[in-house]
Image 1 (spheres, each protein chain N blue to C red):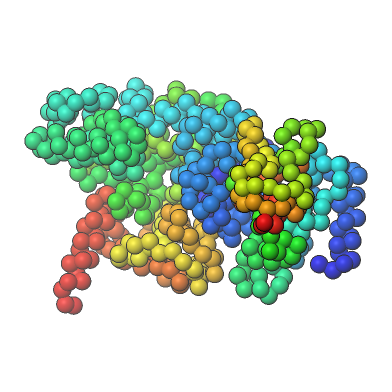
Image 2: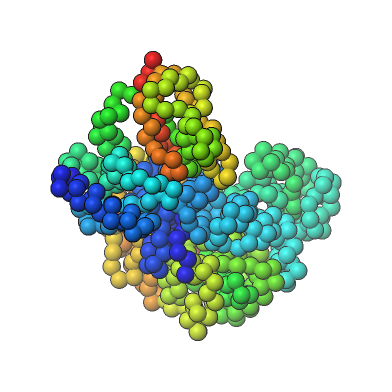
Length: 456
Length: 163
């Protein structure tokens, strides 16, 4: 087992990783910016090292500072959490060169999956279904036109080096293509330093389905089933659940098997999630792979009983999957997660400041992951996620009932939160019936805006 | 801390040093102590090191208790010897070295005059020796850290009397 681990992250995920380490008897080192001096992850780590001023680029994203901290604390490994440096292949390489174990896949694999077009090709080779699209990068708008004719409108132009919804343009008509091509190119060049684009068929109102994978360092790969994350606003997930009502046992088994074979071929190690879009015909298409632990991992933990963060630590220690996982992996019940953000529930403006009251709900099958506390301060420098509320029931109806009850008891004062928004979503007939796709939030918010205009 | 507690702690440290213990920590709810012994150091851990470590304990004073959380800044006023002096703080994380190379003389010593921009120490990070410059001119009153000590971002290194 690893002796000492540095967690290169902050907030709820840093605390999550520290907790897993503590339970496994691993000594923990937290790093923090000056704005996070009073954070729980600092408070509960065995050692804590200040690595920079508040801005993430000067602290949590500052590779020399993080590595230097790892060296002076004499750690064996670094867990990067999610976001920040977790999918930074350069960082993983620097760890390797500094003789520090990076808890994640080898840098070459991270790099492969980070280049969206290369990842597509790798998946295609492994017979994972991908969206019809261009065979590589589009050099000119004319080339893009030709491919669009072949693939069929609507199409989407995507940045090779991209993410987070930037450097993307949906094209529905051939006469709009040249302008949109140049717009996407420029945006991508500005955001990622690389304007290269590729093309995919665009699916209207798809569902977002993703598969959780684990691979050890001995070539073994296992699928821990899927999650559905269709409730999103501007490409940011709000609610996730496991399993998906749309995935049949046969699909689950086939996709799982194909992905295991594929990840084994590319030499994947540790945790990862493969993301798909599902069209109206229940057909799955690969879009990208995230080579790290994800925010919504708790819903998979709920239905499988597997602690994914501990699995990551154990894999990095050299343990084999058959020693980490139960012999027959099964799904039990249904789990839902709500991301509680410090933002106004209607205007979505971020809300920083001091929390004056913080009552966290509990109960059977109710889990809260948070690094906030009463009188804690939410700094303005980082993302607005302050807590994750997860419920697990014997079926979706029970998970929903638990969530509604728990949301009503989650009291936060001093800052705005998205709790009221979640409560409204759970009242929605469509949501309760499981009838939604990635267009749900847009329709929901539009309907709400309409309802507010009319006198009741 | 009571005088007897400080005396007990001093004895504990001597004991640990004699037996070459590298790291030691104790968490007694009201008191949390974390000690890390520098392999290169031959002298006993200084009292200012202890004071800094003891500040990580849960707050017992009413002032700190109001914030309900561990606070390093609330403890700053306790560092009376540094009151009124300018503190040169480390801009990076790393290991402190007071001289350009092992065995060479120190960059600066207490009593020396320094000019703004003058190199006063090295903080080594990832095998690179980063020269740290004085950000003010004046007289070096005290060096606050010891050779080979692990340094975090913002950690005070020298106390300088502006002149």
